[in-house]
Image 1: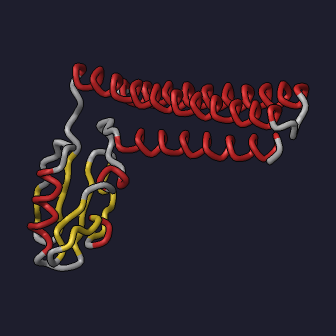
Image 2: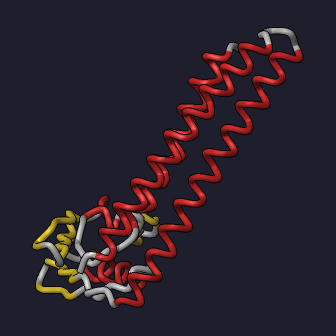
Image 3: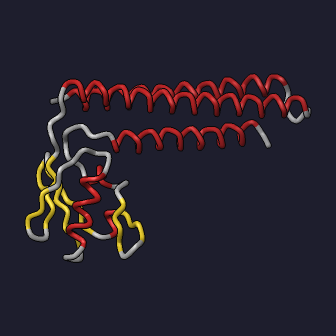
Length: 186
């Protein structure tokens, strides 16, 4: 294993941590509707939990309303119940085969709570990135100990890993700032 291998593997892991953060951020409701909001909801489809997207079309009716069109008529009640019982605090309304899900406006207090949640998620991502930096530096130290690389190579490797860490932490901070702004926008 070389310093380049360690750097590449570390960068890929840091990228995964960052992508995971963006996925978590997409689940945080901001008052605007988006189809990804219901991605984690599973419905009981003939006895097996199935993602909502597997039994219905989810569309955007307008900026504050989602439309869900189950493919089977008997799934309308099941889908509506799954949405109502989810942790999103949504209240779907059925009109024939179409389930309309209006996004309630967020209160100031709820917005502040959401900001605490996204800050916690961002901090978790930063900790994960720093842990990856520590692991990479330990691998570099092991290579020096095994005399596979020189101490100068180790130092250069650590500098490169630090630059990666700084870049990903800056990405996390930038994404957090955008999400906070989105949450506070009424």
